[in-house]
Length: 168
Image 1 (cartoon, rainbow, N blue to C red):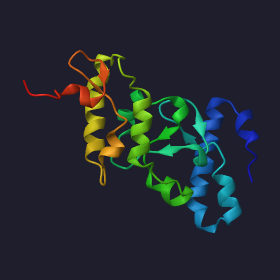
Image 2 (cartoon, rainbow, N blue to C red; image 1 turned 45 degrees about the vertical axis):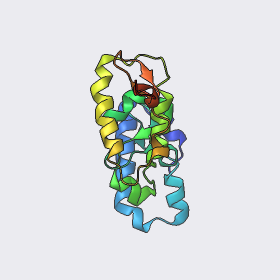
Image 3 (cartoon, rainbow, N blue to C red; image 1 turned 30 degrees about the vertical axis):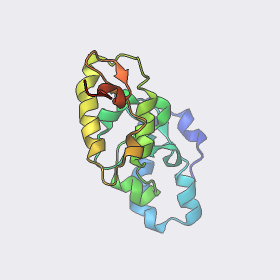
Image 4 (cartoon, helix red, strand yellow; image 1 turned 90 degrees about the vertical axis):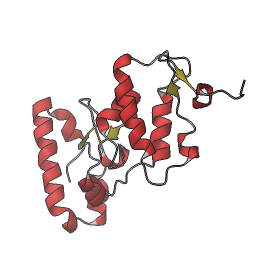
């Protein structure tokens, strides 16, 4: 077994190479790993998180559903969310399952406070993300309840504030 501390002793280039080597070995040998070895590998910092230089262990990452693009989620999440793109190998080899849409909606909602303006360059990204979320299988109103939407002035509001409650 590779002690986790070995990753900390490597410079950035060595760490990337070493992670790649360990990852490729696990992919090739995963069916031969004992349950204990598989559990151990799930604790190694192998996966790049978001668009940062940080790495996390498979047990610590949150994988997006297959139809959601990482680039569409990153502007609406924090590095601490440890989000990674969907990868069938992560699911098959490391037993990481995609997060439910309701969890993704909660992550995005945390970065959409009511009254906060949305940066103009985030509007097309949010539009793509919302299309993907709305196209998700099994989506329901409960999943969407936490999301806020920018109004005509580019300020986040609760969706119910976008339409009139009475007819003149």
